[in-house]
Image: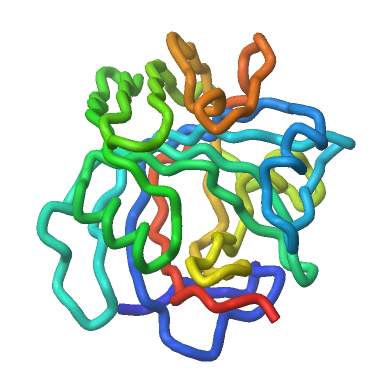
Length: 246
């Protein structure tokens, strides 16, 4: 399976082989500006809040996950296509900007379990529905895992403008073009997993958020304002095995 060109990444891909391949589709980037201190107290030592225009940003990102595959193995049963929803912010470590996830909810029990164990990510099971009608996505998620705080998300979203690639230095580039994720290691410390995909083909989006307690479940209050909304049709992504920060 060939990798996309990596020339647009801010730093080279790791020397080893990728570990997981997946496809993300019908995705909405919904973001809210919040004070830096509201994020700083929620991330572990070793990470710095990455800011744009003096603010931190919280993203709630609904999409459909497809074709999850571990390197050298056939597609994982039960992961052919299912909704996923993540709550994220942006951080840096060792001069490498990336994503910190407060939660990832998925309709696939297999994916939630494997990703929690392998990547150390806060994956939870949710009862989810995602339908598309005349270009509009109807999305619903209710967390059902026992242990984490309850969380609900219901929204409608659709593309509303011309497709574009984000310009470096723009807010859209800051929010979307991220090529690693950070997670807390079970033995302590922080890990980083590199990611490779082609540059995002984005479109402005119209979004109506009907109910959203996803950030609240992580102890973060979002402003009572419409989100900055972007849409992406599909992208293929490859992730490497996490490695501890130096």
